[in-house]
Image (cartoon, rainbow, N blue to C red; front, side, top):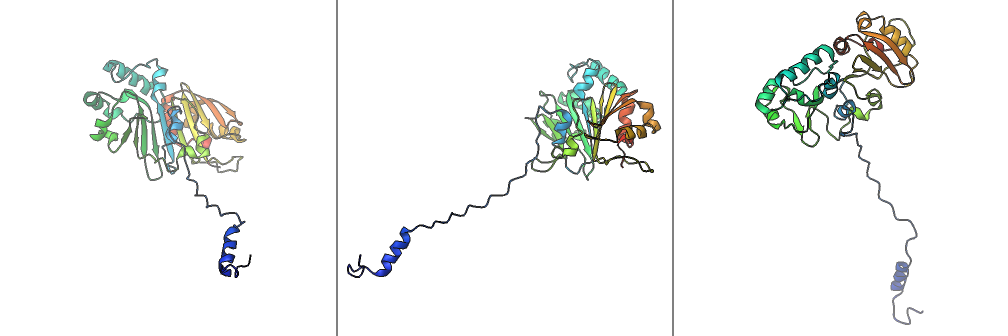
Length: 299
């Protein structure tokens, strides 16, 4: 076609031709937004230690968990609640204090009577509790029975409940716990590795215990450990696949205070566990929470 013949400017023809020829290059894909980091969250199906870890700040150093459902089961007192007779409740606590390992100590025991008289619930309604310390903070998690409504007691600031919060969906009372969008212990493999399972109580430590041997020994590093109690037994967990457990067992047997209470030690290197019988669960629980655990000393 002769553009000049038909009176069409050449510039227009060229422009039309360019419009008809599309750009063969691939369109630029928008850059993907950085993925939000997510952390494990609490679930009702979790064992108490694992559940508590989802709420423990990353910087905490120790975690003490006591399962009061398990404590009650030790004595066949599963049905005891704050609605039970004062005599039955007193019987529960007397037995627990004499024969059960309670590394947490009973956070609400000191205000139990006031809670029962004024708010119609109390320490016997605690399913399990966890207390953490270190990292410039201390706090707790208390799982209460489904029927309990602790809001008024929290608002009144009764004892340790002052400044706490209650979630009616999870039935958890919490204080100084970590937010859902922040790192927690459950996000750290070393901590989860020593969480263990159902137990009367469990004491978990980030890092190793002070007081390692002065002489050179075949000790591998310890990044976390736990001591778990159930009935008359105790289990020290150091993480899987350790070849130093027999050395650690021998070191622990040199510690006089532990040798009196932790007996018949058996080590399992593949699982990283050392099992014991305990002569006195109450004394054993007091030992691991107050003195360095010799089986988990630094290398």
